[in-house]
Length: 118
Length: 113
Image: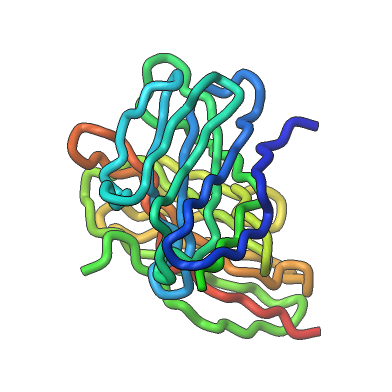
């Protein structure tokens, strides 16, 4: 059955290192979202893409975070350099926008990448 | 004021009873509302969506929306231990020309056998 996949599932790294998280959206979906979840802040939208074009990344710290979609089957989120405050679970979600509506009704979430920055 | 507010709980309900989860939102023009369920260590999954005032039922779940009061709720009838999870309320908001799904902090629900 179709699922969003994310790699790696867990990542432990040291402060200052580069971290790359990958997401494969559900085939045929045209919208991809990156979220970050922490106990303190809850689930926050970092960035989203439609048809591979970035629509909004206002939730993302620009100085260290970057998000791309090199092709329709791969989305990446990079943190460089990483900091301990970046420790969180990062979720990718995908969906399908139809008929010119702005946001998909149903977003399917991947299993998440649990990032720990020491 | 947070855009989407939920009581963080924990909310404890005996098995078989009705669990009632509440959510308020700040943007009066919001039109689309969702409830997601998230089990511990897992990703959120959509369980209900509602767009019109009133009630929407799906099995043991009923979503209720009152746009005048900016209030949306989720009722779980005949609650089961497997319903124990965190329930996230989400609202579509138009921010800087883009439509975004904004989540509440979630309510942790425990169903006691």
